[in-house]
Length: 374
Image 1: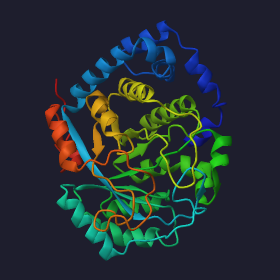
Image 2 (image 1 turned 30 degrees about the vertical axis):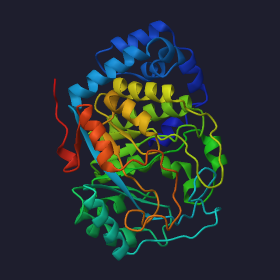
Image 3 (image 1 turned 120 degrees about the vertical axis):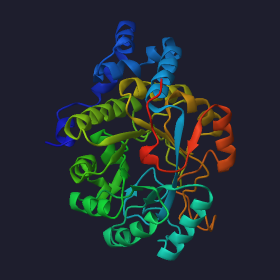
């Protein structure tokens, strides 16, 4: 039984009612708990009462838990967009097949130029990203790209179209360390509404991707929902259920959570349920309290001011100097971005702020950086 089968037993809209029903007592019990937290605990931690009455307590607790587990090291990663070619028709994405613009697939020579530029920026923790097109950017392409990328990467991640278990196992042989696959929304009807065509419209196949990654023995699986696409309370509770499922079934697999907010992209899609800065701060704290072991990642979707604010709270991985266009490091401005970068500061400026706040920006050996510290 996959997580898709588990979730199919629930009316996910009732997750919002679960969150909204939580009382001060429920929140205090969740905050006081020493052992494993439940979905009820997580629902209490993301409730409105938790934000309005307990946020200061949550922030302090999240900071303490993060320092105890991860010390003061923040892993620095950088995305490399391989292509803006995509076969999916998604209402919210700039790469949607419905949008008309120049499509490119980077050649191996162009990829090497990007990798060299990224190394010059200090990065060896590299995230390969692509639009979802199995014909021109599928396994044969990836089997050429990974050995090249591994020459420049200490830690190699991917965020591409969902693949089969044996394909992930093959990419692991080629040096793949981690894969991120975001469900976008866990609401079945709304998922169909915004995924209009292409392989991504198959909700079951996408939701079962973390299962396939666990079966293939991939070291780390990145999960999350696109906040604002549907009701964030619904999607967060479902994501927490998915995390508990993965912890139970694939206990050797490390997990990371990202919480991207819907950003402007070509097509003008408006968020269904916007998430404010205060809510996102609460969400980050809730994840850290819910699961002390999770890697929590923040990208340049967020503003410089907000990223500096939340850095001490629970973040363990950060991007800086990012480009979301193919070829954007060696030949910036030639192709369409997937989404608008909100923190455009150069890497050295971000690192300076981190160091002034007492944090170490770690660019090498991301898989072995973390340590326990009192």
